[in-house]
Length: 338
Ligand SMILES: C[S@@+](CC[C@H](N)C(=O)[O-])C[C@H]1O[C@@H](n2cnc3c(N)ncnc32)[C@H](O)[C@@H]1O
Image 1 (cartoon, helix red, strand yellow):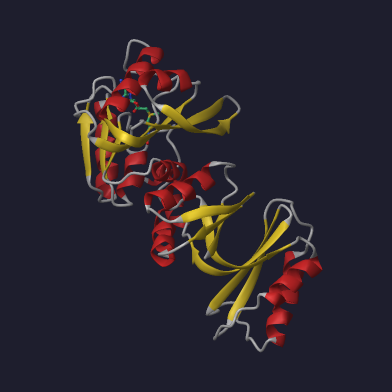
Image 2: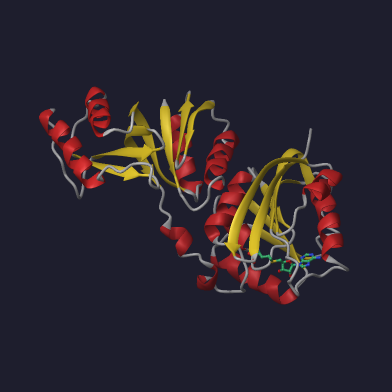
């Protein structure tokens, strides 16, 4: 079955990586058919319903998931012909939405919705704009139009409600919940997720809310107390430790995912003889406690590929996230080899 993920435009590479990581974690038998700007189309062989349900609950950077009924060119007549040719057989009322990704199309989406509505009408279908039983979508991106039936929409408002200043304990300079959740998904956690620089627990909350047992460490007692308040507020399964990320009190190969956002250069919160020392030694510790063949997602302001490789990691992805003029986060996805 062809499935399209309508990706958020907030980042160029993270939304796609999040979806692919979720699919791999769920052992989906799939292949990527088209990787378009704002729309990832995959062919899933079996178990689609359960997979879509799980991804809908977990993903932070997808808007909608649709079952692809047809694909065509970008021109108005091409779209109408494509929809007519692929008109599905269904009962009940419907509505149709046309969505343009960035500026790829000049088509007036509202007029196009009306034109497509006329095709449905000629085929004996009844529209209900507010409360339809079946929803159809047309996505216009790059040189393609994709027509499909809505399977699921992701409720992204829940991430807004967990913004750092809305949590019981707030401290500035933390990752936004959507980014934290996407990184958790990219780390492909199965049972235990570790954040050795956990701060207020933003990453841990997002891991805990998808049912993962989360372990955090930090070197500031006040911040750890704040993390405890936040984790209890969201009722997640957690353990917190007052400990140095350069000397973790965990056995070798005891966790199956790590996501961490250590302090940056300017931060006064560096509890180590130097930032260089802290990044190099904590990287080695993360490598030691991570199981083989598992992932660590490491956020930093400076290039740390060399440190990761020295520790034994393979760098499998790199995402750059511009926060403001003087801060671009470098997000490395690392894998401990077998
Ligand atoms: C950028 S903040 C982490 C923010 C976190 N993602 C959050 O949601 O709040 C970095 C954290 O690393 C902690 N830290 C600094 N040096 C440390 C060390 N050697 N070991 C463990 N934690 C350390 C700081 O106290 C700070 O809370």
